[in-house]
Length: 129
Image (cartoon, rainbow, N blue to C red; front, top):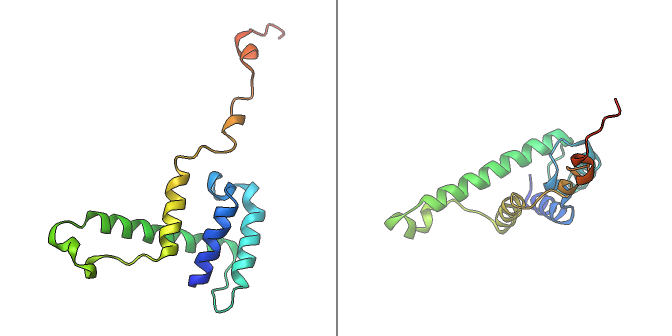
C-alpha cells in the first residue's frame, strides 16, 4: 500500500463517517468498500487489490499503528530521550490513529433507532392475543 493510498483511505473515512460507525462487513457499506477499492486501485504506482484484500491490508496497517503508539507511549527514562528508540509514525498514521480512536466514543448514527417502541407502547399491556 502506497503513501497516497493511505492518504486516500483516511480522507475517504473522514468524508464518510458511516464507514467508522457501522461494522466493517455491514451490507450497508458494501457500495462504499467497492467505491473505495476502485479509487485505491486507480492510484498510480499503488497496489491493486480486491475489497477483501484491502480490508485485510487496512487491518494490518491499523494493528501496526496501534502497536507503534503503544510502544512509543511505554518508553520511559533515558530511553525516551533517544529519537532512535521511537517507532516512526507518519502524519497519515497519526491522522488515522486519531480517526480510529475518536470514533470509539462516538455513538452510532443508528443508536437512536434501537428503541423502536414508544414509551406508551411499552407501558401498556397488549391483551389482544
